Image 1 (spheres, rainbow, N blue to C red):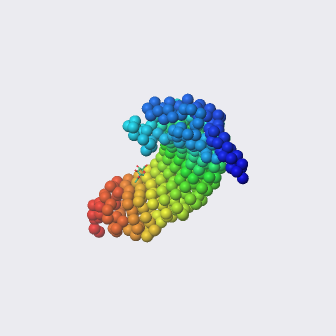
Image 2: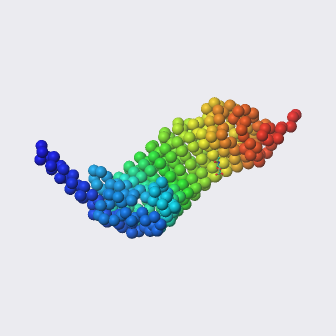
Image 3: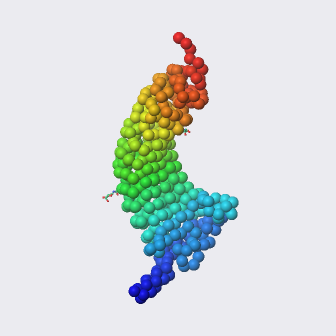
Length: 365
Ligand SMILES: *[C@@H]1O[C@H](CO)[C@@H](O)[C@H](O)[C@H]1NC(C)=O
Ligand SMILES: *[C@@H]1O[C@H](CO)[C@@H](O)[C@H](O)[C@H]1NC(C)=O
């Protein structure tokens, strides 16, 4: 019994002593030497052999003693930023040496503004990765083609970079993916038609790219999807009516595309609370069918080719916080009712012949 305890204590000592295996140490040092951080000195703590203790932004797994997280954020609450009176800035690139950190589960190198170069292709070997967060840098090149191998990946965030190429086909193999953020890059090509295979996805943020083609119908099968932002792309085709039947979809931004056809009636009484369809080629009438289930913090249909009257059922909506119907071809009397009491003329301006409060009174005839 006693011997057992002594032996396990010894083993524990040995295992803590072998914290940060030489291969992980080598990889981190190569990673550091490809980066230049001139103002805060965050890498000053990266000294000695034991990368698992007090190395800024590095943490190790308690059991394997391998490097598990790299968490370097250029904008954070950390006192180091307050003392320096500035946010982070870093240049250089992400060294492929990180691919030797075989147990890495989170790679966050976010908001450093100046880091350039590619996402190392070999990153897809890191089968323990759950998070890739590289937002807010100057990273270019393409998303690795075989990204779909990372079957534990829950967060893929490369927003606000200079990523080009198209969304890899294999991406829809990421069966654990919950949060996809590709906003504000130079991504071209189509949204994969089998996008709906991402069954765990709750946020699909693809705005501000050069994505073309249609909104894949399969996307509407993703049960957990709450936030869809496809704005500022070159999408065309019509809005799938099944979008309005999704159970938890709360935000749907399709503004700034080339989407045509009519607005599906399903969207008027759906779970969507933030709906921006502005600056498209939508035509036909605003569908009737608003009711007590219609609750909008934002309903922006401006800059389309909508015609006809504003449906009278809109007075039956339970709430409309911000409404914008401007820059269409609407005509007729603006309905009265509580959802409208607070709205200003700007919500209705630049139409063909709308009248009534808050615009000019209608001519009696
Ligand atoms: C997706 O995964 C399946 C099964 O693991 C594999 O056969 C297929 O080649 C993968 N697709 C892509 C595009 O990588
Ligand atoms: C809707 O999208 C348009 C065009 O992208 C944008 O200008 C507008 O501010 C958005 N509306 C709201 C209420 O956010």
